[in-house]
Image (cartoon, rainbow, N blue to C red; front, side):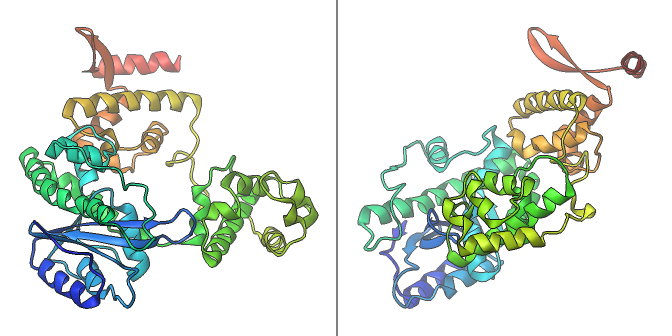
Length: 400
């Protein structure tokens, strides 16, 4: 494979993208920094076909990334292959308002052909190519210039190895007949709605006790305000206020700005500075959360009773057994919150639709309804079908 020198001009980038556009697939990776900023700072883009690879410097003076971005988001003829590409896709979305499409993620694909939940890139390379990736430049400061030859070599390796691995994964997917399982997962990864930053939904990421509409209304207002502050200053939201402090303010709102000095997690300066004034204004104007925004009981994320929690535990045990039986990652089949919702009586769930229902959901539903039971056979845990008469008798015993 031909490796190009670091691309620092629009002309060289356009020529590269013109050649890459002739291939069925390209592999893509990015290096970025976001520890000290709200928005990730794109520092390097690596891209490859089966014939050539290059790293592109988005910080180079005068370079225009349009040829690259057009290839990623507008060219539907070329499949874009990532590994654990969520953050890479987010960066492209921030730059264009669009996501790469069509898209393929090898980390997600590995869940369909093994029990690997979130296989890292180094382990992926070792399992498919049989050698260890040099991790020496892994935690480098990619924003510093000039980049060393070792940094560039390390970065380009991420896409050259992926270009070797992807066809092998694809071949195994075809052999197992599980390629169709991934269609919805890849479309979900490429859904722009996943990357749109709606400040009014920020509160849903914060763990909050109870379902009090006044408390949740204040939490929603505070979380949206924090997003705006963090975006304006371009610093991580946690640098404004941490989640637990935000939840505490929503549950126990201070009566006046001087009381902010008593809030754990805030500095004494908040009692009379401008950001403290803005926070108090938000609290004073917060409205109760509309009832239609309150998560329904029994929906994913809603609390379970003791009996429901026990049923959910049985479902998770069944999930573990089934994932092992068919050699697939449990996370690809369903999530814990779905299991809890199923235990609570919800029936409109992804696990009860399509291929997931066939390989796991139908049995999960039978377990909840008493048609399936655990048994020990030859020292191993197994599932057995329960006759209708036995199921009815068991149900009667539970009632009594």
